[in-house]
Image 1 (cartoon, rainbow, N blue to C red):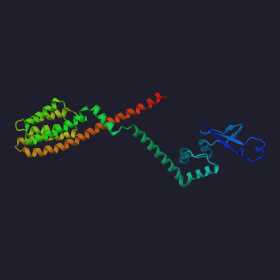
Image 2: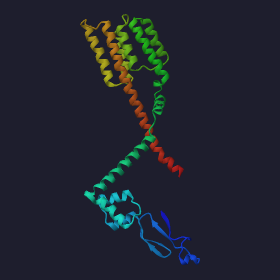
Image 3: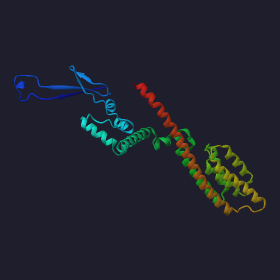
Image 4: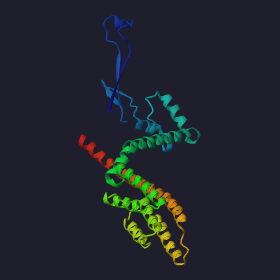
Length: 290
């Protein structure tokens, strides 16, 4: 890039004899190379170039000082001012040069983070993306599922097994996918139901495992409890209904925590994939614009 600087010396208001006689006011145009080439020529007169690379070679700057001088891009200074600036960079073991390089690196990192943030999805976009690719976790279905959990819990505490079975049947009829909390309530509902065979618990647990979307730690917890229950039942030491209700409440809270973690991980993975896709599409859009 060429930079043209016009330095006008003198004016029509000058009181010199040449101005009074209609002479031309003295003017000088200096052409400066921005890239650091050799001297420039204007009107046949060679002028000095203030290119950064040429200054680095002339001043014999190397190492940290040379990088700092190149990074800072100092203005077009007088020779004495330039020498003083280089002296400051070299002072105290090039401490000032090192500080300037560190600041420039920090600024570059902040700018890169800002660009990444501009491509990152907002919280609302992450939620919409989750609902699009995991429709079972949409707001309406989640609200319906939570309400069903409350009613199932009430029916368990009241021993109202007829309505408990009707509620489960409604969930299956509406194709509402069971989550960690739903399976937990179904498992304990079977154990607390006096007219149902406890062996159905193993079938429900096997169905839960076949879903292949629940955390292995939760599956081990539920499976271990089921097996322990049957072992205690063989020796007539199974927990009574009061203790089972307390266990159901505890496992309910554990299931909620595991579900929260699962949804959070899904949301993060989908958002990261969308961000990477935006990063790939950004250069393509820039090339199309050109």
